[in-house]
Length: 74
Image (cartoon, rainbow, N blue to C red; front, side):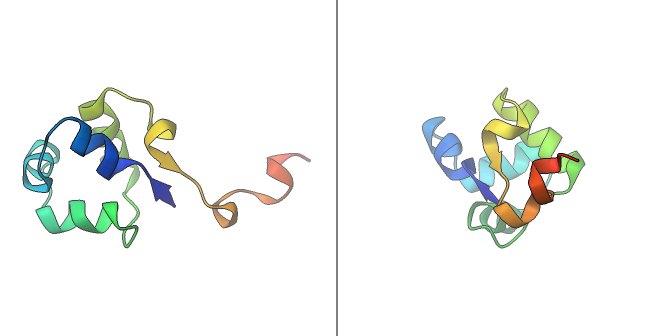
């Protein structure tokens, strides 16, 4: 899964540590999210969405392998 987390965070002038504090996670978790080494749990994705006041799908982009076959159509 790709994401725009770093760009959005930097556009607000926030450090990884500041974002981590707002989300209740470690700075290392924010770094792992930004580099794509870790996909957030659904509750964490909702917290990120809330902090940035953006829909989840504007922050996180699924990779083709994350999508159902045939685009979910029957």
